[in-house]
Image (cartoon, rainbow, N blue to C red; front, side, top):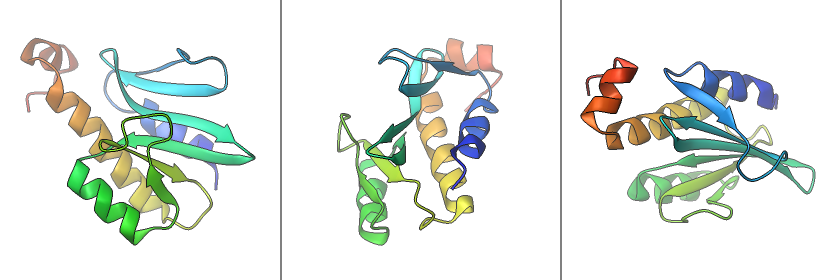
Length: 119
């Protein structure tokens, strides 16, 4: 599965930037200083970690073998997806949207206004 598609999709989000706070091997996508996605490779496997509502996170872990509790993250609020082709691309994009939306909703009204997002 082409991880560049998901990297590009994340960075197309309003206000999204890439950062490397954990070193050159982990690409962190942030909005207004808050992480919403991490892209990395571990043991030859490309991983995408995304913020997730805790109840939804559990459902996804039950539905997909390649959705695991967040690697080196709060396992209640983060999932790590193994990009092995077992999850449809459309679903992964939906999970990215969910993660981004959760983070944006947690921003102050002022920060959302700077993003031109009113929710």
